[in-house]
Image (cartoon, rainbow, N blue to C red):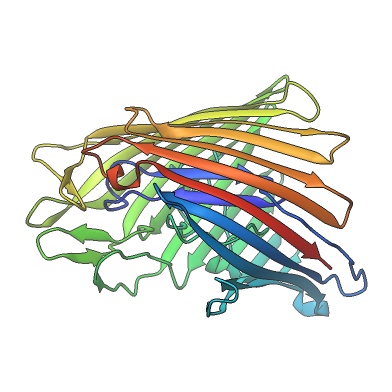
Length: 395
């Protein structure tokens, strides 16, 4: 079972502002016990973890998380799949149970058509960790992260795929978009719609995108102190191509109608986002990844600000470099990641390791450090550290 630990450091300003960092850490610390039930397909695990985190003095917290997933054959109706977790923070200190149905969807196919209805995730773009095209799903805010889990939260979609010879055409409608607001919000009842065409090329694919979306985080009007979510239009292209044991990746998007704030009001603006990256497999077990992403506003005639009064730059960028490997015949998995902004105002280092005691039991540990420059939106997070140990029992 591959455990994914997703850390999203959202910009302290609006999602239309400068720095957006999305960090993906694989094979997070875990300790797992398994007793599967092939007849039902039920997957059930309980994770016990301790985390020490903070700036300066570290605070220790204990938590328990129970994850469950299953699938059901409903005959002519199709297949129903679901996954959910219950999170019990501060075990023994009155922590309240948080229940999250992260995925539940019904899917079916007929001929060249396939459809899916329910709560799930849609992956756009080629480069993980770069929010150029992968902007359909809601992001996780810094500090919203529980214990490691196979499931990241989905959103409510109705999706349709059409398989035409070698090309694939996809479309979706998001009926209840997830928008995070840091301030009192002016709520929107807009839906999201999108379409994608994936066309094969020699040793790779090219994909075209078009959508009307809501920002993942509300845009704060500094004049009124209220948060807004207004639809914007996205058009884009992505491509990947393998060259030997290297996979080259490229994302490009135009985002039209994003909002920015002066000190008195919001206004509508257009932005170009782009990212390039690669995945390199020097051995059968080792993988090296790297990517650089940038954002450029097409207009900057006046000064725009982020939440907190920080001046928003016209052009910004960030990077991610990762190394992962499996050792001891696959029993030990290790990974290291370096992430940050190209202007060196934010930097993150992450290390993690898991050891599979058996097919049923895993142990692990991780550590993360964040550094930020004074006078920038992340200055309050400078010196943040997080250390975590977990034990997961799977049955």
